[in-house]
Length: 328
Image 1 (cartoon, rainbow, N blue to C red):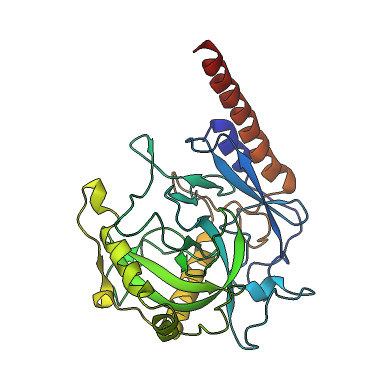
Image 2: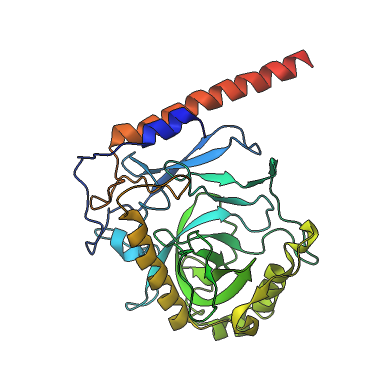
């Protein structure tokens, strides 16, 4: 990103009133707006987020992990169980699509962008018989797989990203959509020597949500789906010339209770991340709009400055593209 954007972020003292990081209820937000910047299918394309009141937010840090933290005064879309723990999921990649979209953890406000490798936009190959991503793929906000922590089960460190989610419902979601999911189980992928957990979940608005309450229910109601998931993750990097991925637990899915404990652990790692005293070099950017205990909380004006700087750059890029088309 340009120096103007980073400069808009680097502020050391924040004074706006906000909700405490460790309070039982974080910022009460139910609906989120997305705001695209740049041209789609280009390295400059970004999707930024705003809360329902228009505040610029980070989908990584400002959207609560637990859906219950945003439901005060609101009725959830569908009642599952009174004791069910529901999580927010930020959709990065819609089912059946190929562009590798992800939360930009090292950019101010952490927009969603398309991953770039060696100067080229990344797309996953179609691994026969699959087409693109076979689930709605995304992340749980306010989680972080700490690369300095070696997991006692996998014997590998975290991958430095929010924990990933495979949402197995029938609806095709949109990039940037925030949905409420019920966790069913988890798969421990070992990706290039790093632990890369894959949470299996179901959108609570899916017709099968009330029938799916465990990983065994998935085997019964969606036969072949879990096997296809293992096959996909094992082979999706092979077209790039890399070996097949491997898994902890011999590729077996762990149950719901195990999954929730993993999620809770990554939430604790995230809390430590946003409470660091300062940012070093190219580390993850923790700029946020709602965590008053975090030294990286920023004002509305500072958050808006990030989008304004990006808007200026995007306008210039679009203008250059139009001029190039006109002279062809």
